[in-house]
Amino acid sequence: MADLSATGLMLRPGARAFSATIGAGEILGLAGLDGHGQDAFLRSLTGLEKSGGEVALNGQRIGSFRDAERARIVYVPRDRRATGIFPGLSILDNFAIATAGRDRRGPLISPAARRARYEIWRERLQIRAPSPEAPITALSGGNQQKVLLARALAREPEVLLLNDPTRGVDVATRHLLYDLFRDLAGEGMVLVILSSEIEEILALCHRVLVFRDHGLAAELSGEAMQTDQVIAAMFGRAG
Amino acid sequence: MRVLGRYTFAIAILVVLLVANLVMNPARFHPAAWGTLLGMAAPLIGAALASTPVILAGRGGIDISVGPVMALVSAVVIKVLYLDHGLSSPLILWPAALLIGALIGAFNGFMAVIVRVQPIVATLGTYLILGGLTLTILPAPVGPAPDWLKAMAGGWSFLPLGVIGLLWWGLSRTPFHDQLMAVGSDDRAAYTAGVPVSLVRFLAYVITGMLAAAAGMMLTALIGSADPKVGANYTLIAIAAVALGGVSLAGGKGGLLGAAIGAFDIFLLQSLLTAFNVSTYVLQVAYGAILVTAVVLIAFQDRGTKRSHA
Image (cartoon, rainbow over all chains, first blue to last red; front, side):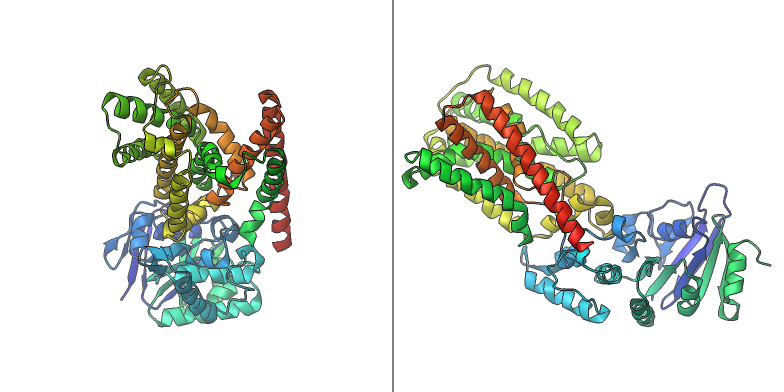
């Protein structure tokens, strides 16, 4: 069972160090005003950011992005256009790029195998696309996001780190994604979701970390997970 | 369909120039002479193919040392290996040529990808080093080339290009090709998706080096000797051919087929204007004009597709 732990993280020189652990099947929410460290925290869990301290999955140290990749910690970035999709490639290639080696039959890629693999995810995520060969830019924002999630999930992650996954996504798709995230957690995946919408975190997450000034301002769960509590912590008014 | 779209312009020019050439110069374009014809076009096609992988890899990837690699390979293979040491077997000379290309490509890749010198500067350094090195090995043209090599500019001229085409077709069905296009399209996204960006770029330089070496062999075949001065001229005209063939110089779009068509376009233009007895100075003007037109049209086309999907 997966168990992701971060100890003694310092998100910025001089900021308060803190620790956190996340267990299998848990959905952890990250909240805070933009630029207060939640982004840096999420990125340090993938080894993309060096924050002192130590990140470990099941006791195995994650020191770099390569380590994270090997440990199947998968990060889905926030800015879909800049760091997510490949505008020049087809939907199918956008989906398969992270797992291109799996479609090999002998040394060569089998287009049929790739398409079959895509079909499974298209169905599960209900991706609405004209055809797998269409350019990814032909899709709506929500469907592009689904393709990116399919790409990430095809790597069979132990830990899924989502940076504002429902940004610019329509309501129907949001609810589909919420159900998907709950299912994935039910299967034992660790999910960490950064969201700029408090309601989303409250509806979806088991626990929330609220960040302020690059430090952990509050950790809320159960009864204490209320909009006003989260907002208070975000603005540094927590009791 | 979309792939063809990028090549529309190059293919249109191809058809027009081919018809014009057939009318103007029926003897030279007679089917019986196609082997020789392809042999004459081969060095430029080879140079254009060689320039393509690094350009596809994006972030300013370019290799201007392709021409000098061709000259160096020619000099080493003919002067050092064939004439000085009497090695004439294709089974020795071809691997030797490819090894030289791969080593130079690896050096370029090391400078551009690991040390992170801007590719144009890194390969300019290689361009100058190789130019001097070639003249040191071979101050003046020598010959001849082995007979089997000369045959590769005649009836067998389709062989090296055919092998390259076949290998690339195979490569385009491996994960490497997908990763190359992804890296060229957006390297940050590729990195986040778990693509080994630096390794892919490095390999692109190595492939470019090896293709440049193959182009050097085709050049040697065509002139039937080694000439230290002709190789370098191919660098810029090959990049023009690549752009004409619809390969985006920003990376991630296009392929070897486009580059080959672009190179053949330029070759046909050359032979057409020569048939008209046009001076080589005017030829340069024609290259430039057709290149600018092509790049502008492709840019408009790109903008068009982007808008229709936005």
